[in-house]
Picture 1: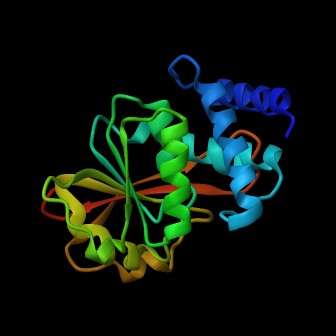
Picture 2 (picture 1 turned 90 degrees about the vertical axis):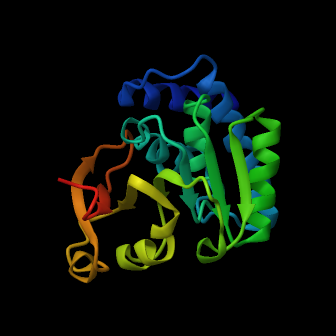
Length: 214
């Protein structure tokens, strides 16, 4: 991996996102990509094999969520290789992130990466979201690649604190999926996202309980 080139691509992407990132973020993200590339050769954590492609398709595609998190405890459902939760935790070190996945090989990688990167604001949980118990609850529950909107809300909605939000990342606007929302939930906002270096459509959908919204 050409570390200097990857770091340069990350720095350009951070500038394009105009995020007020903590010092050393680009170096940490570069180190994360190096770890992901190495583990991916043996464990097939992601279909993206080229480190240069991991920058827009994984790192920047995760960081674009940062302005929508607010100062809340975050649950990342189906985190996979730590996307978006691990990347967001690097960019928001004072915020608590719980990264959940049912796959042991993926949670082992995320635990290892969090330790190597010195992230003390990350907790990794190997579990199905339907079986996860956390009495404190979460202000934000996020999914980047977890089936349909309705399946996500049914599986993970109970993890949300009163007044919290479910954030779902999608490619094209999922009009058909919105016709099957579970009772008691509503679409609060839709954001069309622009990810530097990524031409594909990206949308962020915010959901809340009907009783919580105005």
